[in-house]
Image (cartoon, rainbow, N blue to C red):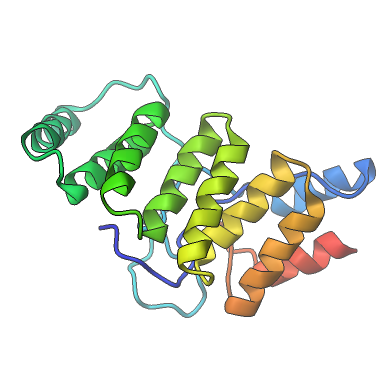
Length: 208
């Protein structure tokens, strides 16, 4: 499930602008785009890409939502697998994905960290962990994770896109955000946000 990809399969949300008057513009232009609802292996909004089936955006799961019976069984199996074979990279990765999808941010980070301690050369997992740090209110840690992903794959579209999101929305670094998104457009001129908006158009609008 955690295979690497050069396509945008990601997350999104943003708002801060150069001037206060532009904040409303950003919210309006990018409204409805969700940053933290998708893992890098579950959504592919790039125009013309037929490598993955279409997905429907889902709301960010509530942290305290009860697990279904099937989810409880899945969690039990994953926990047993990590306990029985603590050096099993895939088990830790899948456990991280499970916690990601069920809104357990801290638990997802812990599982991803153990997975990456065993095999740190996976930009998708670094990117997913960055999303979990962002959800946990730690944008600086999220940026560190996105940068680790980009050090491994400078063309990783999800990491580029979400780095821009966190820089702009959480850290008020407009220049850094635009640089990340401009790089993304260079990598893939057809890259789109999960709501279908063109990243190239976003960059153009934000520069006005």
